[in-house]
Amino acid sequence: MMTGLHIVVDIFCVVCGSLVGWKYESAQDHSEKYKEGKFILERFQVLDPDGRAYMIAYEAQVAGSDADDA
Image 1 (tube, one colour):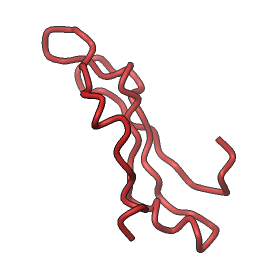
Image 2 (image 1 turned 135 degrees about the horizontal axis):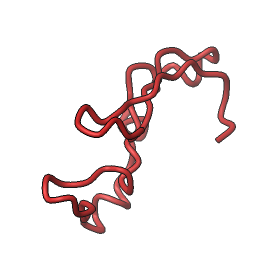
Image 3 (image 1 turned 60 degrees about the vertical axis):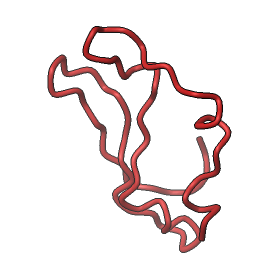
Image 4 (image 1 turned 90 degrees about the vertical axis):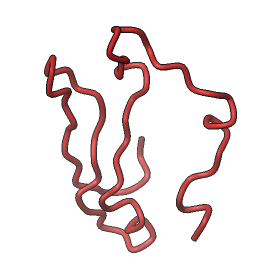
């Protein structure tokens, strides 16, 4: 993704050590500041306790982001 300059940190699973996403630490552009402190989890990397992929309802996939509420 090329939406601006950001500092991000990786998020790892504490059980298996797999990379499951990232967190925005800081954003250089003022228009991107809303991302600071937010995180992205790659849903295909996150498994439920039984080892199966989580199923997400269609409504959750098409819902707006926090930025839409601002």
